[in-house]
Image (cartoon, rainbow, N blue to C red):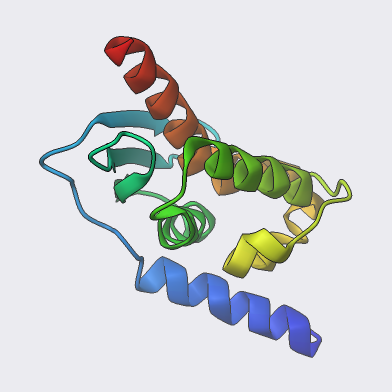
Length: 147
């Protein structure tokens, strides 16, 4: 394993073992619970918008999952706090491209670059994107309920 792979492994393990935002929000504007039947990941993502409804004021997650799903959810929480819907969509698009080995700018991804080789394990891509799908669904359903 080369140095960059060791660094990425350390980043993933740190986020999985000490996840950022691993708690249930009591006062939330949206939540979404999803399961990954392939490996048993079971995550719920919670979000609360700021007073203007423009920025994500709080985001968290709960559940059980493999190292990849927990680490990705933790990185998502740490990266998206304070972002607008458009900024969230941009990061989500860049992350999707990264894990599918499509060309993308990685400046906005922070620790998520640790998943740059996830495309080599196609069944694990679902693990890495589960929390993101839950977030996307929660935002869409939460916005449509409030429209």
